[in-house]
Image (cartoon, rainbow, N blue to C red; front, side):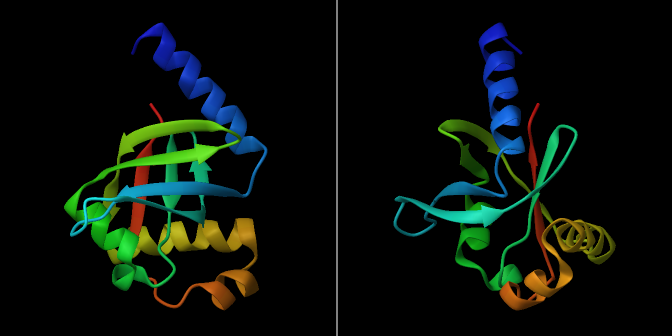
Length: 124
């Protein structure tokens, strides 16, 4: 990775420490337009995990399946990466448990309706 890439990665990781919500920007699979929405996340080392609120029925997740390149924004810093869908039930369960630990199980139950998929985003 270039020195500039290392700086951007460091700035983005720092921005993540100061927020519980990031902006997710994906490309529409039909329209080709970029759309954004706020999402919760869990970070583990050089990986971010996202859980779509309606699981595999979530529109942004369907868009990621079609075009895995997405952009995340936090504190004015952006990070573009290729997302990797997680469909293995055991791994999805691990990610959901991390969300419950970070955001409180009651909040996760309140906002999320389906837990059949997750998304992994590399930060390196």
